[in-house]
Image 1 (cartoon, rainbow, N blue to C red):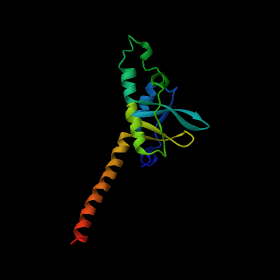
Image 2 (cartoon, helix red, strand yellow):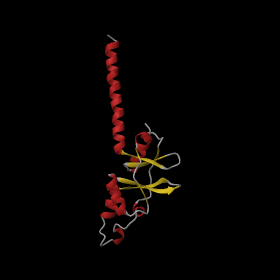
Image 3 (cartoon, one colour):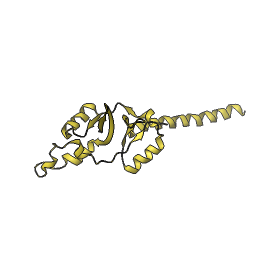
Image 4 (cartoon, rainbow, N blue to C red):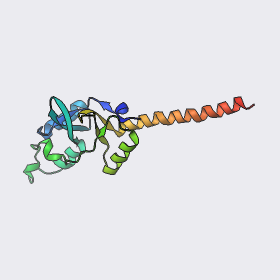
Length: 154
């Protein structure tokens, strides 16, 4: 199963110079828990990081702006993301991508085309239904094989 077949297309994204407050508002309006951080090149978005709702809460809002003015919400997205990007090519198989996600402890990865431009985002929420469908097919196969055995060997 290719990740490009099960990822969510048209992901929400921002550039690194967007204010954290605006990014949080964008997450709310788009009903998403992450934004892919991109650099625009020739009118196309190329991922450089991922900003999650957890990054906003733990990295920014958990600090008291009275005692730590640098964390006041006036930060840009680029000030909060850690610079580590875990991504996957749209033609990659799911299993190695899941191993990479597990090894880096991430629940979402940007999906890129052959040039490295953003085309989607794969989250655990995308994977669970896809794997469930595969398991249902295996269950049906096992059931069908038992039926075939009963009818063909009487």
